[in-house]
Image (cartoon, rainbow, N blue to C red; front, side, top):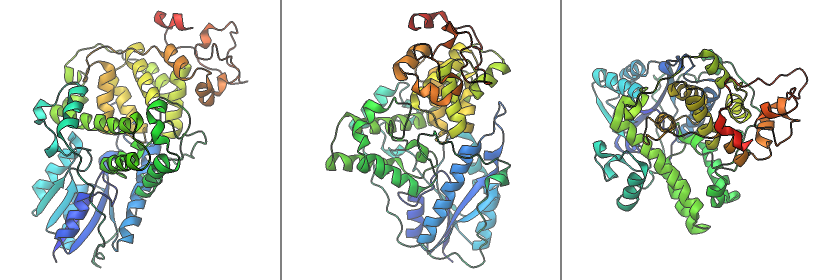
Length: 470
């Protein structure tokens, strides 16, 4: 048979999926395949699960929805767990597939898998680029010439590059050959991951899958028209619509950046164009930028010195790490954000900048501890954006300036009434708003207001430069 395997990776969708579309055009028989890779369920360097409860649940839901959408096209999704290379080779033998179509990955672990596959698969492997807004062949830079500062990159991209059109959904995919074992989508407990009930305080009841991504896109754009307010509200902390939240479906490709871009353009024609509609595209360009930085610098984005080769001395303090990861630092704005992350798998952009600054600048811990914890916990973890942003805060990335966030000033600017802090820190619900962000300054030494629950003292002395904002 004229057969190809379409290997789904971080492109869990049937819309704008070049690998799937091109395979169905070229081959009579296409076998959709996904593998829950064994490396995803190991530990990080600092001992965190690479994928904890929230991300793992979202991934499983995304694969379930992909399977359903492939079934609608007439076929099914072959699912395996373990070593993707081994399973691809076995599947190619069982199906007599002569080609593998898939989307290219750019960071070390994924590229290593591609190298192993190239050594063992005797047929043709065709890679496509589907994770970026701007295709690598369309950007006006050689990879080694990618600017080290974002603004020149953005300006030149906007002047000289165009976003390609989305690929259509295939009309039909033939049924799988009868000899192919389809396999089962695993459950959380199959990976030894404990199921956790969703927290009612989460900003959105996130669920994985292409269908959910489209529902969110439609709601944020057309039902609520919140897109028109994106720039003004994007620093919010509470609620579904202070930002698009589409990053949660972008990380594993439930929606493509091109689909979002062209939907923004449609919105601008049908509803309105303003600073907010542009700003969502602006953020997609930032996302692209970090991907191209990762291509340019390779594994240096994972090194302690970063891409600046900058040497900082960090403390080795496990108590600090535990306090930060569990939301027990004694700084309410930091703890509230970390507790939200632990309970829901999500945190606002404003929160991420502050907790990162606190870990690196105040606790003086290795920034990679924070990056790895985010990898474990964040629903929208994207390897390039995550490490790019952490390097940025740590002063070893695309901007070498030291970036200190004054946590008290930030808290009072973005949570002036302490509403967010009190939502996530029950110990402080009765505390006056004028001291809720710095309870150590209150005359009431028993500032932990919930009986039987004690809010911790600060793990470090309060920095003196916070004092003028008490």
